[in-house]
Image (tube, rainbow, N blue to C red; front, top):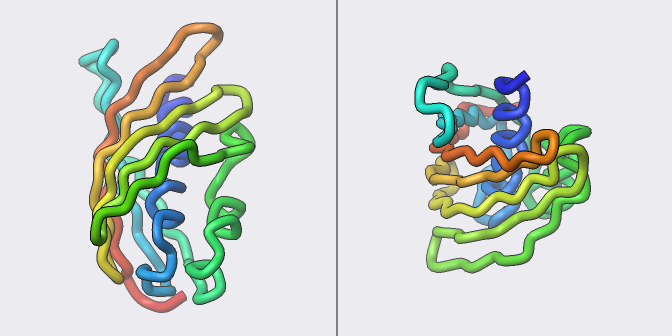
Length: 144
């Protein structure tokens, strides 16, 4: 169950990266890797979570479309309360409604073919807050 929560929180946090400045990202197949740690459970060290996602040219022009493709049922109603750009870097805060009420903050740097960053997420797990620290990297691996 805890692995599922971490994967959900990580997936929701991943949304922030491709949505950051979609016009600067290249369409194609992207491989995204998230390494997660839970401060309250130092021994909890799951294998990195990997996923691939195809971003079309239309997707990269429409951040809401990316959200629809990546978000899962437990990370619904995601909105940004902060989006600050500095060159090819984004600092953000994103809040998601749903079963876990996830709040993510982070910083992601990107080029047309790569993304790299750190994301902290807090999820409500049965009334208790679970905080995760996530290290994210992504790269375009080819066409869709």
